[in-house]
Structure formats: C-alpha cells, structure tokens
Image (cartoon, rainbow, N blue to C red; front, side, top):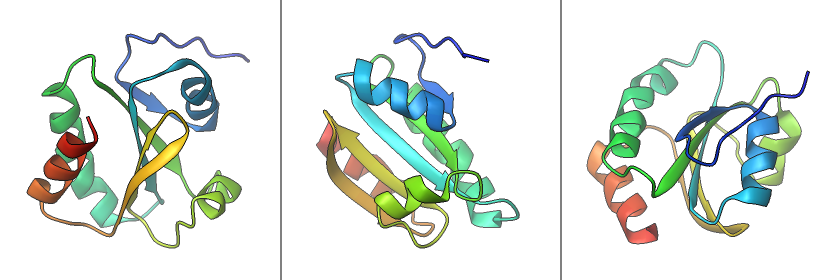
Length: 113
C-alpha cells in the first residue's frame, strides 16, 4: 500500500517516507535511527519533537527502526541507537550517536538550518 505524504508534514516514520523526502524536500531532514527496547530512544523522542515544533516549516523529522531497515542504517554508518543524522539536499551535515543533552541537538540543528 502506497502511503501519501505531504511536504507540509513535519513528522514521518519509515523508509518509504525517508525515500520520498530525499526526493521532494529541500528542507533539513533529521533522521532518528531507533531500535525496539531502546530506553534512550524513548527518552529522545519528545526532545526532537519539541525541537521540530519550535521550527515549523524548516525541517522534517523521520524515525527509522534499525531492526526493520538495517541496510539504511548501514548506509549511514549507524552502529547504535539512538543515532540522529542531519541531511540537506542528500548531503550528511552532522551525525550524533547516543543520547546527548537537548542543547547539543538544538545547537546542531540550528547550525544546519
């Protein structure tokens, strides 16, 4: 089943959404690689959602489950969850592995915007 996405959306999930955004969006794309049973991933979720809400129309946030999309994680050199990758126009701008303070995510994202 083909999902439909809107460029006006901020929050996305899955490889299909990621592939669509890579083709359609010129905004910053934040890819959050997560894994099931990852407590740090659950802790990070509201932090990134809050940053996304503070920057409406400037970025897209995509959550990728590494257990469902291992080849995508491998392509980005992701070895642990959570890992956040910032992309713009198919270029990797930054990568943050592990759970870090909110300020580090916010500063990295602001510098990429």
